[in-house]
Length: 253
Ligand code: ADP
Ligand code: MG
Image (cartoon, rainbow, N blue to C red; front, top):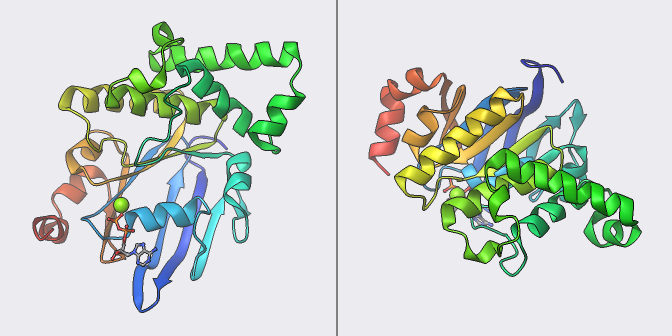
């Protein structure tokens, strides 16, 4: 998809948990080559939205269309093979594997059959290709010098960067990041923001869910604000920052 075309379309997305409407008729788009942020106070419905879009949860109503395809009934691993890669709010790396091995796992995700089948089928030539590709992703995120260190020995900020490299290795059209700045120190946040800007410059598309408003404001092209499950506002960062309803929602949390 060319820059500026609609990559992800969320239309009337709704999720009920019993009597609670956690996500209430939310609609927005993500355009190719942009960084879009979904923000909101605690309990606003960010994580639920993320899980609905990635297929981890089923919508009660509405539609999610990705790269022109309705994702209704599509399973999470199939969503990955359609070109959506995600990271997790609580880092899910393999701490006893090296950085390189962790990123190689991301490469295998792209194969429909998944990691185990993918690994079994690989011959030496393919294995070498995966190795080289994983190394390229580590270079892209600035971690190549640590390729053979154990992932568990990295500081949290670098673990988040490694997760981005693993997501990139799946060759995604869209990278979904769940609270990437959570728990990071100020310098780590700056480094991560710089990395994400670089990916955008390379034409990548990013949707991030984030509580940290400052992190988002320096980074996103477009911001969607949720509050109590509903879309409260949408616009460029400066518009969102100046919006009294958004300020009130954040002050109240
Ligand atoms: P956020 O990520 O913005 O903090 P969540 O999406 O986690 O918000 O939660 C939105 C609302 O839905 C909250 O009131 C939360 O308690 C509720 N919720 C989330 N997941 C579940 C679930 N599995 N069952 C019941 N309620 C849930
Ligand atoms: Mg959350």
